[in-house]
Amino acid sequence: MVRIKVNEGVLEGSKVDNVYGKPYFSFKGIPYAEPPVGDLRFKAPKPKTPWTGVREAKEHGPESCQYDPLSTQSAQFKGEEDCLYLNVYTPNIEPEEPLSVMVYIHGGGFFNGSGNSDRYGPEFLIKHNVILVTINYRLDVLGFLCLDTEDIPGNAGMKDQVAALRWVQNNISYFGGDPENVTIFGESAGAASVSAHLVSPMSKGLFKRAITQSGSSLCPWAQTYGARDRAILLARELGCECKDDKEIFEFFKNQPAVNLVNKKVPIIFTETAKLSSNIHFGIVVEKKFEGQECFIKDDFFDLTRNGIHEGIEVINGYTEDEAIVYFSSCNVDQVFEQVNQFAQFLVPQDIMKQVPVVQQMVLGNKMKKFYFKDKFVNKERNFDELLKFLSMDLFIHGALTWQKMCAKRGKNKIYLYKFSCKSERNIFAQLMGCSFIYDHRIPVSHVDDLFYLFPSSNALPEVDMNSNTYKMIEQVTKLWTNFAKYGNPTPDDSLGAQWLPYTAEQKHYLDIGEELTPGTSPDEEHIKFWDEIYKEYCPQKLC
Image (cartoon, rainbow, N blue to C red):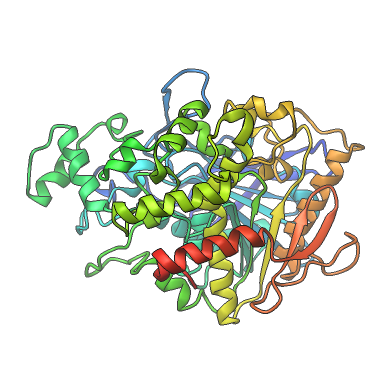
């Protein structure tokens, strides 16, 4: 038992043995804001009211309302609206010098996930003498509905994240942490969130460094298109025919939470016709209302061109086989049917919203020639080529466009990586129903990098500390914690390689695999082709 007094009251946590070496103190289920219920539904969170007595912090707080796509029970609803809780894991409450702090923002397409320790436990990272904070925030419609009104302005889930970061600034010193040395990091939608914090006025001054894994604010799914139209359409689908915004708000406010989760609200025909896992509720450009803070005021491309927060250092990167996650919601064989039948399938998502169908047909055929040499495609013959196309479309081109845009300004130290670790921990393709890939190789899927940062006890057994797998875990966690501590992932030669910052002139990156291999200009042939496509069809989305 261990007690700590924070600004809101006294917390009672616990001391935990670590099978990987370093014991730590655990404080779970700490409320960082008032429950966002009733009149606070869809609104920015309010600071937590202090409590009296001792609050037990040994169990996680509720997750946000959601459906779990990996559940063995189809369409299983779980979670609560009262979900604004975080967890703090520290190796030392009274260190000689304040410890570096790493705040993890979970992914899940803005519609599922949590910061719970069964997915994001501290055992690997805490060995390197850092504090880990994980958070919950509102998801799906409850976190990202936007009506462009004062009552439903949008980005509630992002404002939850800001509230958590403000809590860290105000309280982390009580856990032995340094509020002036905070690194935020996240994967997928969590990475897009981190990327958004790099340009949000609400987030400025709340962190010193950032790591974006498999996602950036420039990925085509990161910013919601037609948010107000989706909100109105959702209201109609739920039975509200009102046209007055106040009445629509009252309707949404009084809906049971279960009615507002796992809703797919396409407003473009291709969102329905094209097999994909579209994200219908996410980050939006907000309207400004008097007395309210605005998380994002402009398009991410314009914001990034104007520069991320001054002085922030960033690691950005992606995995070899990102787009395996695409098949989590659609059948592989059906995807190939669409590729063969419709050239438009191969039009990048954001270009599809900009150019007429006749140009889409021309562009789709260019893509087909580049990736498939105009041949008939199927799962056995062309899966890797389709995977490369989808990975570029959904993740890699957006990540590298962000990298080049930031490097062009030259005002922030930034690093780039490609993740290629392969072991028995690469299981996400199997979870997504793509086990046939393992017949000829070990994929490095979207999410697989997380299994080298967190134990993920819900999906994987303990790791043999004498194994080659554990060596890779030690390498990855050392890179990440070195960066959090020093702003340099390889401050000495202990890892056997030097990871140089990425610049516009010298496009350095690190291949993070069984060995650490420095290089320049990853996936250069594909990036050059995609840049030419964007220059012709959508130049406003290039650096």
